[in-house]
Length: 114
Length: 111
Image (cartoon, rainbow over all chains, first blue to last red; front, side, top):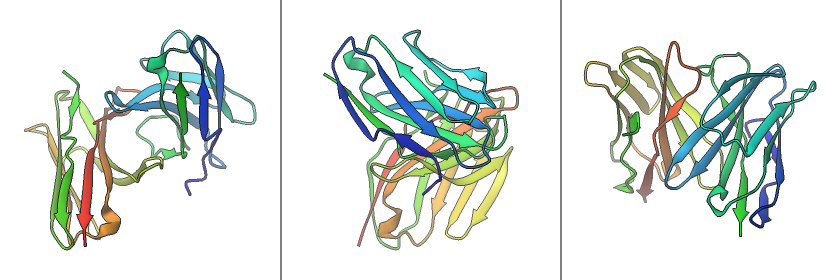
């Protein structure tokens, strides 16, 4: 158990809908990272927050947004969902700000868009 | 072309074999090199971490970085069925902001 929690574990929804994925980092970790994992693209970095501030952005679609709250938990919002958004979404956390810090991954949320 | 290339396998070996997993990369600025292990339906977990070039050993695992060839390797000695997982390489430059992952190699160690 990495200490990172993610809810829900599974999410099934329809195209055009909006969902929110939630992540609680390990105790003491200030950085939260969001990744998308699919069979064809592998693990892709989406966005990073450090102590409530956005620190880095990857190939995150405009339909996706995230935030980190004062208690350091984070939420990833996916809107206008398309079939291609079906994937595993992982949250990871680390103590430091740089992406080179050891990142601890949560168990993931499996999103299925029908 | 992706910055990090990794053969997806699957790779099947008998228990006790030496396993060699590899990644190639194109960005010569990469300095941080990592190997993550991902069991089915779980999140990745860090296995080995190397900065710059050279070798690092931890128990049955050895990580090697050859920056001149832009090639990294993970060796697993005396492989066990519990090593069956997907192994992902990841790397990053000093000026970078995020890890670049390979697509992962699926390993099956059969008893």
